[in-house]
Length: 353
Image 1 (cartoon, rainbow, N blue to C red):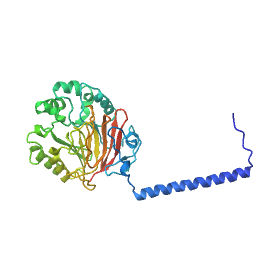
Image 2 (cartoon, one colour; image 1 turned 90 degrees about the vertical axis):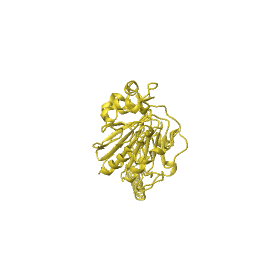
Image 3 (spheres, rainbow, N blue to C red; image 1 turned 135 degrees about the horizontal axis):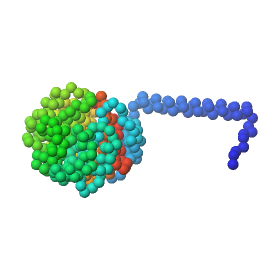
Image 4 (cartoon, rainbow, N blue to C red; image 1 turned 45 degrees about the vertical axis):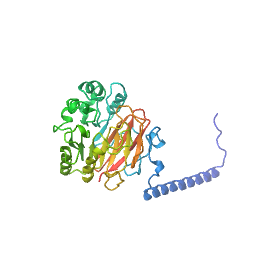
């Protein structure tokens, strides 16, 4: 039933309209003042606002549209997980611990990669359990293998080394994995210098020490780079709250990267997602020169619960398979972790040194 038209006198209606307009103007001005105070104050979230999720996602991390802490711990407004990435900047997408023949999670993460244009990276343990030719063909190949031509940054892992000399890994990825004959290499992508290292130190000739062939190459490669921003990818994380925990064998990598002013490290090995704030090679917070580490061993292998929390950890989840999407900007980066079923997300930005 329609309402009756008002019988108020025209003069009275005019007075009411004027009062409502005045109240609205006051509210708008108050809102603008509040925004101005927030911007001027540069406030950061409290510890309770930091996104941490292990068994259960926190409200901030499970809502794709929520703000997530950036590399310095400050909140960065984030759009929907499926929103378009900035045009013009290179986009990397990938994860580690991927191809299994006894599950389908790798097929689910492959679907996410299919829907994300850009260069694909892996973070080791590409084909379980021994990285044989057959396992690369039948386990990795039937999921992530369909965009093999996009995998410009493959990384070897310890399971890939279960086949002597990582022969299955070498054969499957070919020149993309060993452009100089070794399982470590570097590429310039956009404004960034990107290094891939082999962290299965017990299987690498000379190991991973400072004076090893790989260690000497790493320092020389870093010294020759003129890029402002540097990213390193290798399998074993120096710092981790996961089942395997922090790995001291890759400490020489961190020493060299930190000395050269590197910005970002991506790892796998632990079957979870974990992001750390900037820290030095001893794991101490370092906002000025610290390296941000992200573990994304979520490509398809069974997820595992966390152990004791590691200092400098900002966000973590062991509830969701997914991929990390990284946009390489001229002086920084934007990241977002996208899960296969939407139960967890983490996104934000960082700035190069």
